[in-house]
Length: 348
Image: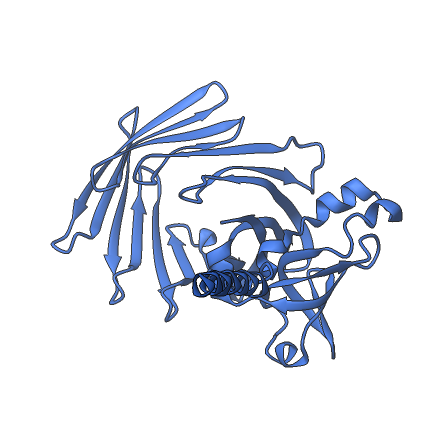
């Protein structure tokens, strides 16, 4: 009997030890799970300069994505936020980099600051967060702002993480109504409908996921287009024909480079012919698009830059306008620059 009691006591002791171990070994929540998505426009709108209200948002952990504008000894300016980072991490940065950080928000009224911030690597960001366009700004010659748009209120499909809706606001012309964009997909994740309250596009697809029919609605007008294709032995589309409801055809022909990407596209209709060429970097990203028209005044080129997440951050359009003068042809390069800014807009 004594031995039996002793064994029971030993088992109870072991159970207590194991229970204690499970409590002691429990891990604190990951900084990612605790961090909220920093929506600065919303904070400014709700606090409106009220420091008492701002305290409700301060001393909390936030995740933030922005572009590096300036680098100091112990911090950097990221899209208007002062971000404290480890000095070794700061040494890796360059002005213009897009980075994602987690830090504690201080001073949510005049000089926003993220203290004790940590930079997240690309894999962590991709696995945990959804990235979306938050601002688009077009400038003439890269200086004076021509047009600016802001994007917000993203919603996503919880399984595919595809965008279901978002809002676009023109901040240049404030009397213009906000556009509420919505997108719908088929079981293959092809877009079957997209648009806002003013204009929509809908699509029907072939078995190979090429567009068969496009319906464009704008106000009281509806435009319908049918598509047909020709492919080479490798399955590349070498010719696409777009026919409108009046029987007018627009024909697209394609050539491919060694990387299996389109290197040339020729577009012809009843009135004009356009000749496009495409250049890519080693990552397969489009870096330059040139086009020539029958009218040389319409010749243009586009150049593209990207961040480490593959998002287009800068688009430069050069209009090569030729002017005939008594001593020959002068070329005037009118440059238009569009900058794209991204943010964390959701969690996976």
